[in-house]
Length: 135
Length: 296
Ligand code: SF4
Ligand code: SF4
Image (cartoon, rainbow over all chains, first blue to last red; front, side, top):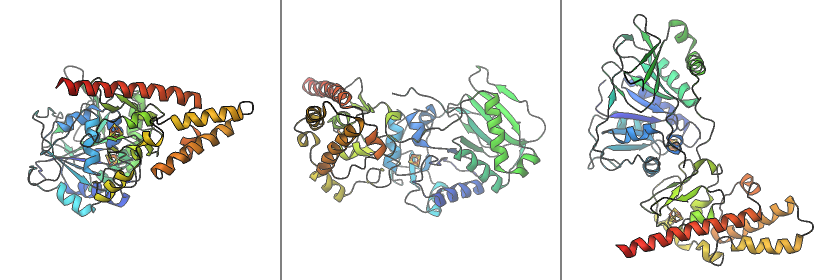
């Protein structure tokens, strides 16, 4: 299924703060949906390492991130010198929202804009992509 | 500051052209098992592209049609693709066998395994931070530092004591987050009027301690020295530190400092040295801040 957004799922692997049933259900439904998505074990750990992947994600447009509180995610990216700003990055909070709400917002085909999103970011630089060699 | 390090590698579950799709359950279970072990996973679907997330090594797993070369490098040798066929045997054996395959390849390629540390450290909300340096002065473990342009910075994340949110309690501006903390606003939840009321009641840590955060610790250290000069032992020193922290807690509310942290506090002499160093850094940064205000 085509989706104009880049989807990023954070598994919060090193703590139990995101309800297990919510994160498992979100991951399950993403897996069943047929969309392409990226999943990371723990955005906090990546921020502490200043993982260059965060900068790559920050430079993408139209990104939806399933993780935790938008304020926490915003400053985790900023701490890794990969700021996400208004308008292109939407953070969905698996600590407070239901799996159904998260999945429906992740899979929404509507483009992220400052007027329709709670938390977003603009970054001018387009992402460089690595085309996987066709087998 | 930890120098930037890319994750060891990323696992790609490839279901694009030239491969057969996985079942939804297989995809979910493999992704979930890999994430639990700390791996990043990209799911590539037909027609999909793989975003460049800066990984040098990609372990590409799929039900490929025909044979794949085991390793491919890009022209610059910056990205290496390691292909692995997910044959029926692996798929039938389930997620554990996918994990075993990834770990075997990791050992073979000498790639550092992920994980090994619970990522617990403070994150600063610079929309709120006023650069007062109280956190720098408070933390005894050198987690905080000052950037080249005089701004507070979290510099040594791995020095932070797991599950200790105490510095967030001393921040007068509710600007310190611990994303893995149980409750708001420390976990990043929006700050409500109750939180702000609590902050307004918070005693300024430096005034609480007579202008210097460690003055109390030092005074008590001096008293302790005279009292216990001949018989001071670890147990007494520990009790002394706990008394100091209790005093701090009376002023600041429950700091929730875990017992392991209290027992691992540096010695009084080290605390004094750290206090002097933190004070020096904070003063320098604050002076720099004043100076730049005048320059504007
Ligand atoms: S960003 Fe949030 S959900 Fe992700 S690892 Fe950190 S605390 Fe957990
Ligand atoms: S105590 Fe709070 S406001 Fe002061 S420098 Fe630290 S984070 Fe910023």
